Image 1 (cartoon, rainbow, N blue to C red):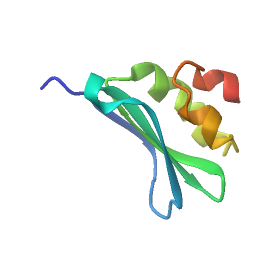
Image 2 (cartoon, rainbow, N blue to C red):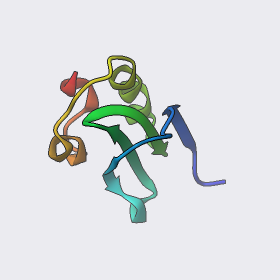
Image 3 (cartoon, helix red, strand yellow):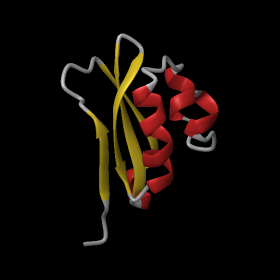
Image 4 (tube, helix red, strand yellow):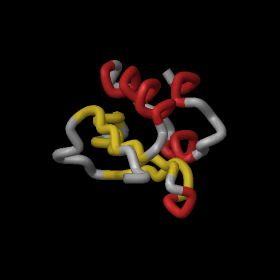
Length: 79
């Protein structure tokens, strides 16, 4: 009950994933990509990534995986 999982998009058919944050801290996100396009996110105790990541999924944004992995950079800055 200490974990809150929020999911946006459908990860079916992804060909790459990017981890944002550290699972050991119990606050992280997994970003799913297909051909470089953000198609889904799974966010654990990370409401900020969930809210901002929705816009990336809806825009079918293409974002550099290294930038996505940097949890210090807000997802809203990648749109």
